[in-house]
Amino acid sequence: MYRVQTCLMALLTALVLAGCRGGGEAPPPPPEPEPDPLAPLSSDARLYYDNSGGIADSVRIVARDQESWQELWERATSRQTSPPDRPAVDFEQEMVVAVGAGRMTPQDRIQVDSAGFVDERTVDGVEREYFVIVVRTIEGCRRLEADAYPLEIVRVPRFDGPVRWEERSEQDPDCQQAFRLSDPGGDGAG
Image 1 (cartoon, rainbow, N blue to C red):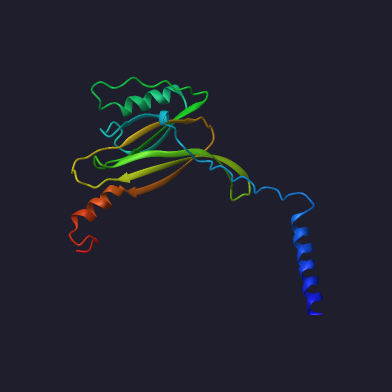
Image 2 (tube, helix red, strand yellow):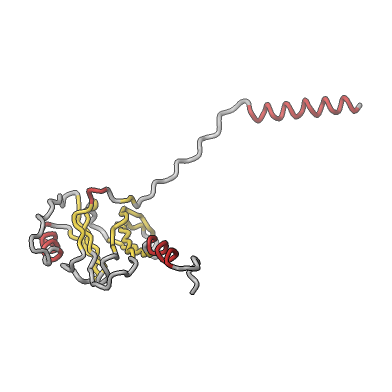
């Protein structure tokens, strides 16, 4: 009897496994992950970087036409003795974004990390498209006690709707390493 039960159990197990593997269609593949709408900027997106103080304020500026682009360029390069030529921009397809950090030190930087289109629902339940620009400010090691005014100008795809700025800040990772090396205990404790 035991032998019959064992055989029946083995047969039943084989049938169940065969039924799981055979017949029917294969399950659909998992869905592709949606791409991040905020894409890093290409290397040719940067039009200008300086820290001499042509624009000494902390600013977030969008220029969507030649006139505002010319004003922005003149202001940004005003501290240069021989300013570079203003890059050409196709305002049918592009717009210009300037981000300034205000007064900082020469080791500090500002940059536009990424940008893209994002759909969001407003508090009224209306779907709205925004152009999101991610700005990163990197605080240097504060080794120099001079003033600097980091400013970056980039080109991005044109968008006539609202722009939203996402701010990120961080300490330059080299500063943490330099601190650990200069600390005799190696743990930052004094």
